[in-house]
Image (tube, rainbow, N blue to C red; front, side, top):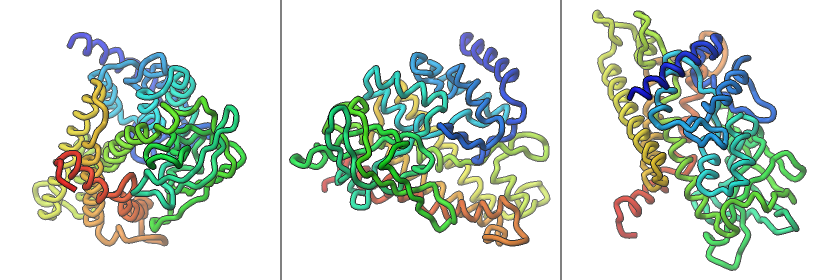
Length: 405
């Protein structure tokens, strides 16, 4: 405990002296910095904050130091996140490199692959996207048809991926390819890494009802990937894919299920539940200073309790993974619950704002109100992306409850 307290004191002193003052309070969903070769800066100091945090391994706190991580224990990582919340600072870096392909490389990658890709991830130099789903291989992911044919030291890729999140902004893609058609479909898949900046790769935006979208469809026409970037073994990509899906489902569940609102301050200057702040602003207060509508108060309380319990459960699972447990069918539980919880939260926020959450453009609305409308519409897709709730419930039935087919 004394060592943890000393670590906390040293970290607190460093963050107080180095973290940009301009970023304090800038920690909502709009603050996410994804890095990459052509980074988009949510704030002028976002890249500087990422760089100084990366120097201390704080972009990937628990990864090994030799790959650009901080080598911290889970308890030390919690201290870091506590300090971020205390100072109302944004995470220095986010992205699929940290949440998906990085953990997969730590599990399956060769030493050369780890040293090639992981430090670039931790320093925010490369932005990643995922190439899994195809027009004919969504829920049945094992039916992927994008081909990878050997050509010397490379593979030549032809085919199409769909629902590629940020495919138009990413530098590299991790993807599933068909390398063998003579075996059971799960056994003929190879997991590859591919540089997106080359001829033969085209990402086209897919629009959503919310008016904006992170998704693209991605086309490959004689694109190339190095044989040295095959993860694990040729034709054994299904094993890698399942492991990565566990990280993805946990990431989606955490991102949506725990909410994405920044720290809010109440009238007394103390940190306050953002839903309570919203309720007071739009519904008004009763004589006790509470949100004026008792039914909405109950919904706020229930949603907040559910969110907190879910966060603690996901954290317990993260601690288990750190101790060596590989993500398993429990990630399907997280995916179902977390995404449905976010949909409930979005419905509640619409109820709190009332007619002010129905705007699309024009006068009479604040930017945050337009954003709320679009966020609610966007949440309709939560239970579809990353594996539909129906597919997840089947996994839970078979692998958790062990029900017969």
